[in-house]
Every structure is written in structure tokens, then in C-alpha cells.
Length: 238
Image 1 (cartoon, one colour):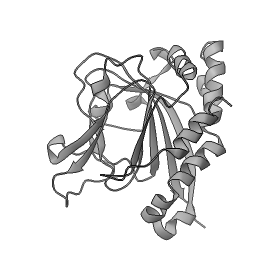
Image 2 (cartoon, one colour):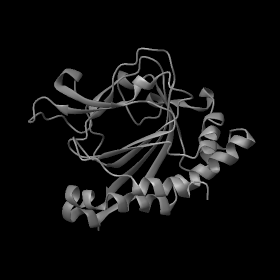
Image 3 (cartoon, helix red, strand yellow):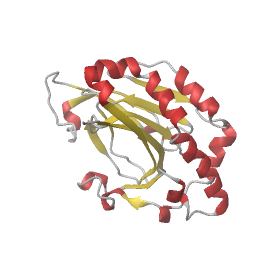
Image 4 (cartoon, one colour):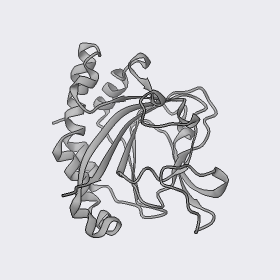
């Protein structure tokens, strides 16, 4: 399978612990696969502004558009060659083997975060195309509590918007409290680093109460294309 090597590289990547658990992999896809990702990326007409999906609200998302990759039906309208390629990607991203690989990788971290509740959680993947226009920004936030881990596969054509990557933050006030679904102000945080938006790079992080990340305001009219993959969880009852 063309994605087996990607799965192995993700499993083997060392995890950095400060200021929260994350890892970065360059050239995460084989070169020929990445060329196909760029060549077969859907046209803008296939994507939906995220504000129109009912999943988010607020002005901060007006420059973001998405297309889900939950099943082959999500890409059924694409031209045949594109569709065949993305069918393979969908099968990999939603497959039990990949989900289990990622969960096994972060199992000790999840044990610390969830304690006895871990055994009552069920997990599922949510992959999607994400496109951000110029002047997009996203204040520091941790992600919603039902997120477990986010994998952001950067998919630009070149290095022209390398400075527009996702940034990692830590609060200036260690006692700062911001609801999990809210975004903080940039002046409340110290930017630890920006994971530059370079072709074929993966930035991944485990969601936690201190996994503050965001995007500084973009200062160019370039395109910011990301293949976003997240594991979500829910607590089983009964």
C-alpha cells in the first residue's frame, strides 16, 4: 500500500513535550504521492465555507473552506482520476489500522489526560480538505474537548507562504483560563514557535488543556492548503 510508509513514519516520530505534546515530520509523503496530492487537489468550487457547515460560528472562520473526506461519496463529484486517487486516501485515513497506529502512539499520554474515563471512550477519524485565504487568522485555542489529536498535513505548492504556518503558544499568565471552545487574544500569550508552512510537512499535536495553537494573521494573498485529520472521541454510556 502506498501509505504504509507514511503510517510507519508517523508511528516512529519522536514526540516533543513542551509546551505540549506535538511532533513534526518533513517529507511525510513519498515525493510522487505528494505530487498527486497537489495535482489532484479539488477546485475551490468543490469546497464549502466552514461558516455554512453549521459546525462553527464567528467572523474568525470566514476565510476558511472545507470538504469532508469521511467516505467515497464526499469526492464522488470530482473528475475520475482525482476521484480514484482520493478514494485511496479516504480508505487510508479512515481505516482502522491508521487510527489504531496513532492511538497506540499516544496511548500513555491519553492515559494521563483521561484516567479511568479512557476505557469508556470510543474514537473515530474526521479527515477533510481545508483551504484558508489570505488574511486568515486564528487566535490561540486548545481545540474542543472531543478532539484527541490533530494531524495537519501541509500541502502548499511551494515555500512562498512558509511563514503562514500554525504557531504554538503558552500563556503569559500560567493561571489564565480560557474555555476550550473559545480563542484567546494574541497578547495573552508568548509564541513559542511557528511550524513553517512548507510543502509535504506534517504538524501533529495531542489536544490537552494547554495545547494552545493558532495562526498569526496572514499578510499575503497566498493559498493555505491543509489535509486535516483529527481523531474525535465520545464517552460511551449505559
